[in-house]
Image 1 (tube, rainbow, N blue to C red):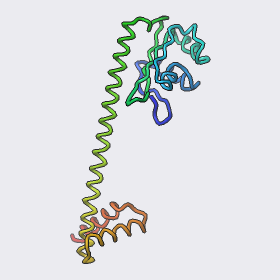
Image 2: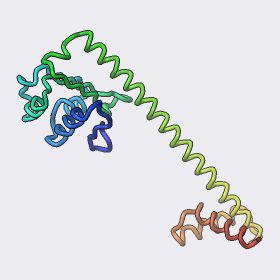
Image 3: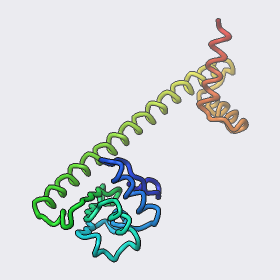
Image 4: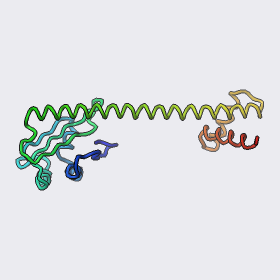
Length: 188
């Protein structure tokens, strides 16, 4: 899966699959990477006849792999990952029923990834909103303290707190939190 410009194996059914993926990453070519970069299915039905990817076919065959099928995982119009299938039998991915089953698995995988990303985005947004609301609450409390002690307007209190924040190069929410904590500690 593409992760910030770096390709990584997120999951593998067995260690051999992960090893075969890693070998492609090391030489920066192979069916997985071709599928990722072109956003197209890449099939190598007989690795012994394969002339693409320099030494990779020999490496795969050394591990008993005779056929490879790599299908990009297209999420929101972009290839974010690849489903790689490796087989010991030549021509293992040429059967139309098998290819249709693989296409269904790829579709379901893309749906799951999309839902996960959407949920992650919702969770992240919710966390950001919660943080913002918490910060806003403590800033309002600090403004109230400044208004009471300095006998000024809300705008003046905010300007004073913002000025302290900028002078000290500290987040406004942190300045407010500190003032509220010190005031609460002093009133005990």
